[in-house]
Each structure stands twice: as structure tokens, then as C-alpha cells.
Length: 255
Length: 202
Image (cartoon, rainbow over all chains, first blue to last red; front, top):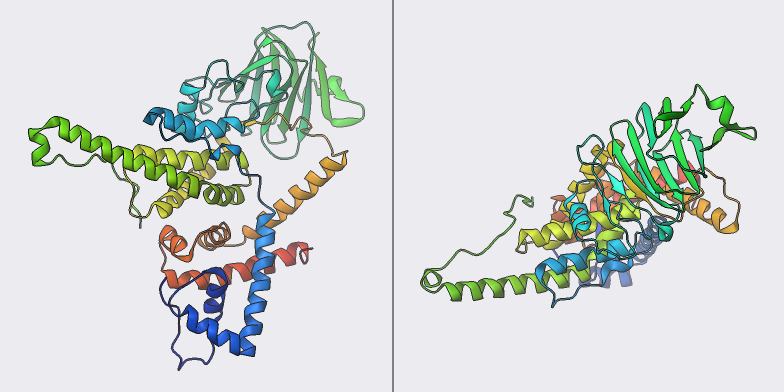
């Protein structure tokens, strides 16, 4: 590490930067000399303690942001072929996705790679995701293992939600929120999503018990279709479906 | 600054001898590739946790942090050779990916974990209440961090994610001697703003 020592003619004591470096770094030029000075200087010793205490508070505050490290960090087998090594690199990402596919930047190389390599029959279902507006449909498959998983998209001004198939039972719960993304979750069944500009198609091939859709205020008009019929227009039809106990929530039965 | 425009496959130039003996060239290339992958393995094991921590703290989204950290390593794999400063290279890549992600956040499609079925519901259990407290604390810390300029915030988060002054300096394109100055300034402002907004930390 480079020297941080200021000219001794400028000051009798090391600067705060130097004292902080002493706290942060194991060794650097002049560290021994500064450490020796601090050990015998009451002013610098007190200042170092003060800086260390402040640093600990900052570390604790920043530490409160932490989520657990994904378990995937380990599975790297050096004997595998190069391609399979890439699989190992991302295997952890898959492992942390709680049964859903990785939450990825759409069309990212990693994502495309995961899509291409997701093992058939593995607990993590396969998925294909494209950025809204792109030609390739975005499809995510949820399963029983991924109960209540789903997708989130940025809020468009108008939104059409299309359930591809009629289903005998099940409900759609709609929640209006002040902020955030449009989110779709389902419980039970098998659901695939297809995302395009202002439109989300839900392939309810095995009907879910509940579809939960959160719609932020930025989305001004919503239409939900089932097959060829329009089930609800929001806000036009909202009064018919809004829960008496909560004007921001609605419940719609498929039949 | 670190160049990210390196060729995706940096195969060594063929030597005169190898032009005479193609099998020797192949063997040499295989040895170079093996050495690179061994180095990549070592780097991955050593650097992924810090990179993930830095991203997780920056983004507040552990899944996206995982994805971006993984993607940085895959880009390094695709590069085919180690840059001069691999740690700084990785940080630069993830910073670029984060910046790109912010640009298109409104357009981004995310997948949601299964655990959060209670979207839009209020917390009603002790666990949920604890989670709410934790989320609130995270929001407070992010709010304070957002008062810092990008470079100061990055320096503070990098340092507190375990990176050395030298790594911070190379990654951010600043001198090593200025890292201490930035950390002092950033730390003081962060704490001051946090306490102004939310009071002294518990």
C-alpha cells in the first residue's frame, strides 16, 4: 500500500485519513510508525477510538442491508468441461430461486444460458424470459414447488391481462397499491406468463386456486380477459368487485 | 481505467514453433485454458461473497445481486484470460451492469419468490412484523446512502464489503491516497443524514 504519511512539518499528528487507514488496513507504508505514535499519543489514541466507533456504527448500519449469501457459491467442479463449469457457476443461482427460474435481467447472457441449460425434470422449472416489447414471449413456469411465485413488471399506463383458458374454479384477487411494479402471483396449478408491451398473457394450463395481481396507481386502465370474454375493466367495473372492507382490493371469480 | 473491451477469447498468439507443430500449439492452448480456469475457480471462491455483498447492499435485491455477480464471472469466463486487476475488473463490470439495470428498471421483468404470497397484505405475525422492521431499516439506510454521490457511495459500500483501499482505488479509477479522504467524507455524511432522517441508530 502506498504511503499516506503527511509531512511531519505540517502536523505533529497523523491525519484522520491515516488513522482510519490504520483501522481499515492491515499494513501500509508508515503503518508501523503511525501505530507506534498512536500508542504513545493520548490525542491520537482517543481520536482513533472515536473513528473506530464511528466506523463500527456505519458497518452495522450497512450490515442491516444484507441478505444471506446464496448457497450457490460452492458448486464448482474443476474437473468438469468448460461448458459444464459455467453450469456450476450458475447452479447456485438456480438453487436460490425457490423453485422459480432465476430473477434475471431479461435477455442477459446468463439468463439465456440458464434457459438453455436448465435441467429437464429438475425442481427448478424451465423458463424463457424476454424484455417487454421484444418478439420472444416471456414464459415462466411455476409449479407446486414454487407456490405463489410469479413475475413483476414495470407499470405501464394501460394493461391488458389475458387468461388464455377458461377454468372451472379459482379466483383473481386484485390489489391496488400506491407504488411499485405490477406483480402476478399464483397459488397452485401450473402457470406460464407471456409478457409484451402493455399486455400479460397467463397460460393457465393447469388452473391455479388463486391468482394475485398487484396493480400500482401508475396503471390507470386495466382489462382482464378470460379467453375471448372480458371479465373486468378497471376502473369502470371495479365497484362490482371491490371488497366492502377494503376499497383497494377486489376479488373476481372465474365463474 | 480498466478496459472492458478486451476480446472475448484472448487466445495466445501462435508461435513460430507451433505453426510447425499444430499439436504442440493445441497442447499449449489447453494448458493455458486449464490454468485460466483454475485461476477463475480460485477467484470465484474468494471473490463471490464480497461481490455479492456489495451488490446486495447497493441494489437491495438479493436475487438481482446474485444474478449480476454471476454474470460478471461468466463475462470473465467468456473473456478467456485474466485481466491485470481481476478484482477491479469484476467491480467495474458489476457497476456497469447495475447502471444499465437502473436505466431500464421501469422495463424490467422480475421473477418473484414463492415466499411472498402476502403481497399487499399487512403484517400480522411476529415474523412478518420483524420482517417489516428489517425492511424499514433497510429503506432508512438506503435513503441515507442516496444522499451520497455515486462515487462516494460506491467507495463506502466497497470498503465495507471487504475490499482493500487499493482495490477500491483501481475499481473506481481514483488514487489510493484519496480513498481515505472519500471514506471519511462519505461516512460522515452518511451517518449525519441517517441520524437527521431517522435519529441515532439503536
